Image 1: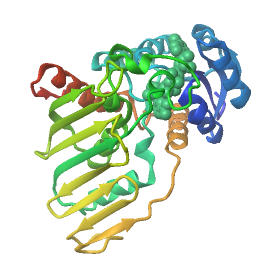
Image 2 (image 1 turned 180 degrees about the vertical axis):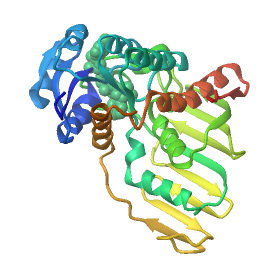
Image 3 (image 1 turned 30 degrees about the horizontal axis):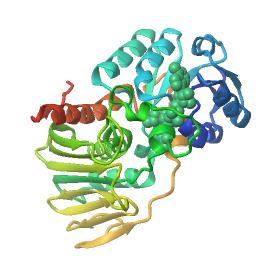
Image 4 (image 1 turned 60 degrees about the horizontal axis):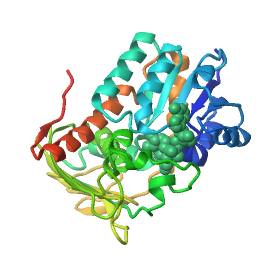
Length: 346
Ligand SMILES: NC(=O)c1ccc[n+]([C@@H]2O[C@H](COP(=O)([O-])OP(=O)(O)OC[C@H]3O[C@@H](n4cnc5c(N)ncnc54)[C@H](O)[C@@H]3O)[C@@H](O)[C@H]2O)c1
């Protein structure tokens, strides 16, 4: 294998065109050699911009000897079948978030890649942002003491056109509106990033969730408002509130409350601590200047390193599944009006 990971894009819609194609181009050890979309023009315009050969046939792309890995950027319900098809074709897989719509699909993907001896990683770039990395360091340095409570808040105000064409209208489609095809609304689509970043920064896992959700203002099957109460494995409690139709938008952010401090994410990272911690003022709030990092580029670069070194990727399928587990349990809770346990793994 060369020292440049040769990627075949699968799905060349909004995010592939708006961000991922450029991220691969900016990555020092990866390149696009082919790109597939079921819509011919969409594949063509992608390769016109980022290079590689266009196709509408996934099997043809996966059969190419010069494709080392596929990057799947398709609607959520296709993540599992496309991953399994790629694994069976002997290709490493980097799949967009969320890993899949259900835990069962995620486990099938993990198993298929393990059986085929290929790597599976999930594009969850928030882990690499400067503020997440710094937050993790500060939590590990004891800035917060014992974590007692966590709060997530995302209030988006998506236009009606989002549901049939995303933010850019690059592709006309209705998968985002369908529970079966998307897995859900704002929780699985957006809050997945915050949940994953905080799992990574704190090391805490949710053990039980209770959710209420509804669809108030949007012509979709998926929720446009959701609240979730959570118990964590260290005994901490927390909640999430998210909306895709919060008029006026604006509000948002994540808070972590500890026995000796507090942390605020969302915009600037800010930390209050009662302890002596390098880089923080004692008994006061400190605003942290975190380095700007393009998490997508970093994640693709590290994935390519893992392929070359034969090591596990830093964000393996299991991590994507564990983040999805919280979301999936919350949706089941909202359906059954009962608390639902989040799976734990030995
Ligand atoms: N839009 C964003 O801002 C954004 C941001 C981050 C991540 N994501 C994730 O990226 C993925 C794609 O989202 P999107 O917003 O780009 O969606 P999109 O609908 O704009 O693009 C999906 C593309 O997949 C193509 N497609 C459909 N069936 C296919 C098949 N069988 N094989 C290959 N391609 C097929 C569609 O033609 C379309 O071009 C999702 O997992 C989403 O959560 C999106």
